[in-house]
Amino acid sequence: MARESPSMFRSRLQQLDTQSLTRHLHTLGSATGPTIQLAGRTVILLASNDYLGLATHPDVIYAAIQATTQYGTGAGAARLVCGTLPPHTELEQALATFKQTPSALVYGSGYLANIGVIPSLITRGGQIFADRLSHASLIDGARLSRADLRVYRHRDLNHLESLLKRTPPGRPVLIVTDGLFSMDGDLAPLPELATLTQRFGATLYVDDAHGTGVMGQSGRGTLEHFGVEDRIPFHMGTLGKALGSSGAYIAGPTDMIQYLVNTSRPFMFTTAPPPASAAAARAALTILQQDPSRRARLWRNRDHLFAGLTRLGFHLTDSASPILPILIGHAEKALAFAEQLLAQGVYAPAIRPPTVPDGSSRIRVTITAEHSPEQIDLALSAFERAGQSVHLL
Image (cartoon, rainbow, N blue to C red):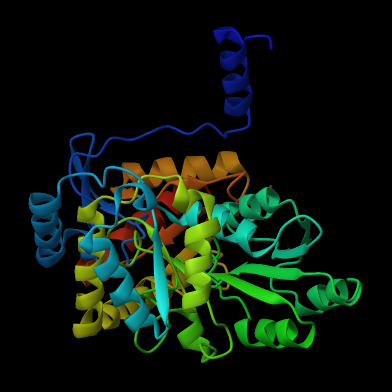
């Protein structure tokens, strides 16, 4: 295989740059919170998925410290090789109780969970149907399964039904979707998807990474929001968003969890998550259940910001969540808007292809429970000035 010279990488980077698609890492001088330290300035952060502000909660930090003191900084190996540490099993038990499922299994990340679970559910000879805006990890998991993959139009039940009708009888079928779509903030039609799944003898796999801790009366997620927990027996979610830690989980029947322990390659062959992250997630789960005021503040802040952005005249997606994307279109203009926002004291990066489809670049604005009303008002003033400077308003 021919080696690529450094000049080839420079050429490819230049090509990305001409399309306004290059990315750069920004080193922060603080923890992620309602504000951050960036390049020696204090700016308002409107890009974090730490929806409940639990990543810096004292009880969550203390739990991580205690677990590190007792069990060390790393798990040593995969759990099947080196053994399972108490923070992992305690977290899984707490997740199963919270999610009202018999069992749960923890993974190192949501990406690992999706590329590990989907190939365990279906393989070559099967058929996968995925929502067009499904997270990249769902698509990659589907490809790794070697099953045939077809994409249906976003939340288009008629399109999905037409594809299901053309599927030969007896062929294994898996439908995959986000519960809450991370780049648009809208919800999958889970009740109707559950009905189609039952009608055609398919299996439904829901990634509820952004719904867990946010949606539903108790914060159990999108399944609770729609009242379909008894119709969808298992689902996936993450620990690194509303729960303020890192990692992911599958919640579902005990037999399924045991099957994944024996077949899911990212679980079998990856070092287990650090004890600290497991203990932190469990502490965050306790706070979520004992302090509903955090979720109430989150939704008040969401409504405040949504009303302000709408009043200013920005074009928002049909969001039903604390994710409030401002649609712009061209990557170059989205990048210019983000740069103006930062100049005005707000950090909310431009989201461009391939993260979103061509022609749909945007500023993905997220709000948390920890933002104050005053910070939201300051941010809205910054959005107004930045929008005017790039002729969006």
